[in-house]
Amino acid sequence: MKISWGKGILIAIVIFIAGTFIMVGISMTKNVDLVANNYYEKEIKYQEQIDKLKKTGNLQENVNIDYNGSVVNVKFPSNLDVSKITGEVKFYRPSDEKKDFIVPVSANINGIIAIPAEKLNKGLWKIQVSWNFNNENYFTEQSLMIQ
Image (cartoon, rainbow, N blue to C red; front, top):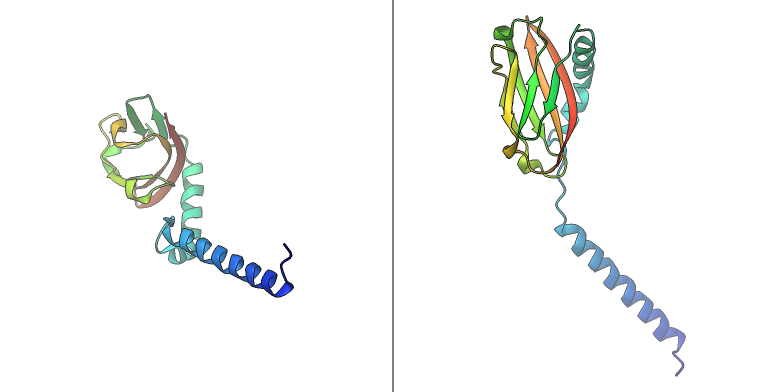
């Protein structure tokens, strides 16, 4: 059976239009989580973030984030008075923004914040610690894989 060139063009156009509608339908149902809804403003203020990272790098001892299977420990430098440290620890889940959460800095006498690991689903987490000591802002970030 031979198809005329007119029918061939019509079939090609119909296949193209159907494929386009299928692609649009699939892309409309995909969930796209942004890192931040106000990413433009955050990008403009990124120099402040760079300054915080430099200050943190100049410390004698950095914030240490440790995972032992049941608890995530965030330990602040031992040479600082932990009662004067304020800030927050953000647990950022790149794959699902609904699982992100923030813990205020309230370290114990040893400078440790203990976060139970049952709050964390398996997978990749980015832990961002923004803190202030003696009116100086600091920032550290570490990736953590929960198994």
